[in-house]
Length: 330
Image 1: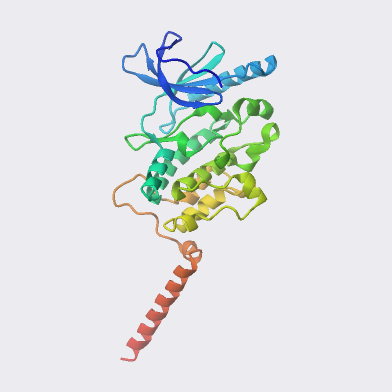
Image 2: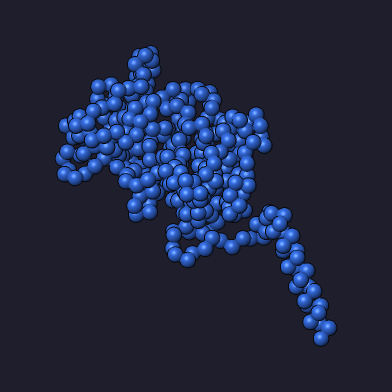
């Protein structure tokens, strides 16, 4: 692992490092002051390339970084941090992004579990609506931009209630040179990684890969239990426990939508993020207005409901029929 930069290190005569706020195998994320703008903070995402790689591969890595950074700097969406600069220094590449205050969703999930609670479905779905909009935007770019590492710890909730999809460390363009991309960018986080992303240099990822990771992320947030890895599910198809068995408060609609997103085969998942959002939320606008309710269940929800619910409906129906017959005798 590369040695992290020390506090007070100055990069490019513009950015003064305060401290590390994240760290991984390919580098660190630093909180830094923008020296030319008093009081302005930024996040510096560092990418450290393995010096033992062949020179040609290192050159490809550097070119890929600048291609991706150029694309990211053009992105503009309220649920994505803005990339304002990118540069290289001492063999390391850096992305300069907005610093996003607040807690990540993994922290909020862990805190709820420590209280013996689940995160409320309505709240999680309100976050999901914002995240879906960000991914719809990324996937609509030309060429489409994939994140490939969607997980609770990469999603932050700001003090104003805005969701931000952070850590662009695994973003890639849907380019034909899959080998170069995979060598550079890694394979995501196992719990949320679809089976096709395990393919290494031969693996093919597309928008369905982000949809799987999004579904797995929602599964974890709603149940407090990590999803079974796709590789284990391939060997044991029954190993993934349905959401409602872990959290009985989950609606049928939410369970069905997430199960659809987490299908092992990409062709069995929603074709687009917009389609998944529709399946998950319908026409509901999850904007946290007090008193607003989740959509009323449709006929398909009643048909797909639990055995206990259907029995209760039958009993109610029989009571009503009996009452009508009794009234007609008077």
